[in-house]
Length: 124
Image (cartoon, rainbow, N blue to C red; front, side, top):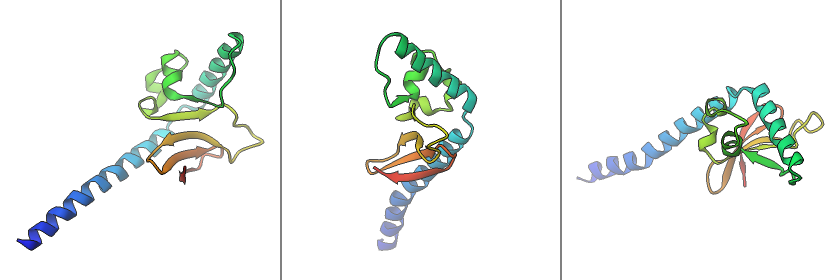
């Protein structure tokens, strides 16, 4: 009876970990497959519209905002419109190591893509 309890406990602890790892791999693949030029065009259009309206330009814009504003199609967001994911409006060649895309991953960590294309987990 005790060994069955250990096996059940292991399964209860291991399955969510494997599922979370699979979700991370899927999200990393989505980041790698983003249409970069299309995303840059969407960000520029968003910034122009904000400036034309006299509204301040935020430091970031969410994929959800880009899709709901018509700047980016849902299928162009790589599934990131359904996540708490934002794109920096301040990334440029002078700051290639700056965070370009930030995804809220857990209460303690974010999954980020830097301007140079590297992807990593960082502490909040």
